[in-house]
Length: 181
Image 1 (cartoon, rainbow, N blue to C red):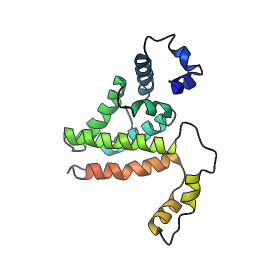
Image 2 (image 1 turned 90 degrees about the vertical axis):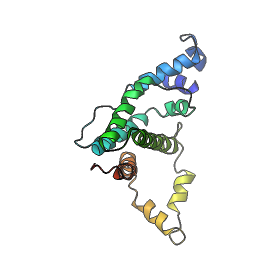
Image 3 (image 1 turned 60 degrees about the vertical axis):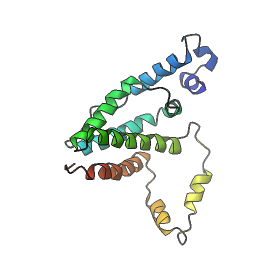
Image 4 (image 1 turned 45 degrees about the vertical axis):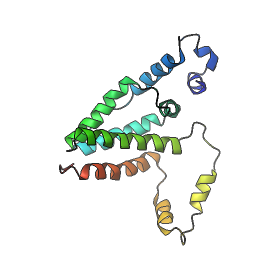
């Protein structure tokens, strides 16, 4: 509730004056945020649309990271988000996956979005340089050659990094379907 209040620039206790119960307030907020998830996107092939939709969803949710802390409790869902999920699952099916495989593929991609946002976009941005960034910067190339090479190659652009992370996941998920992406 503190996160919701902070987002609305008010005291947490004042929220209850306007809403009968906490759950109703949180669901209403989730619905409002979910209405901004991308559904219709550009792209000829299902894999192109999935990549575009998932990257757009990542970028959008990066501006609403506090909502993730409500979602990861696993108790509430915004039914408005079903439009986004339907579009993703439909594209996985169009790429040749069965309905069950499509749902699993969508869940893997959604969990990647949540995990990346929780790890890379904290509620309260830390003061740079963080211990994590310093540790990565100091990776010993002799002991960890592959990790050091990968860390050096990272470009630092969050949108590009997420796209480059989700792209091989999509390729792997779709490659066994037997249908060209």
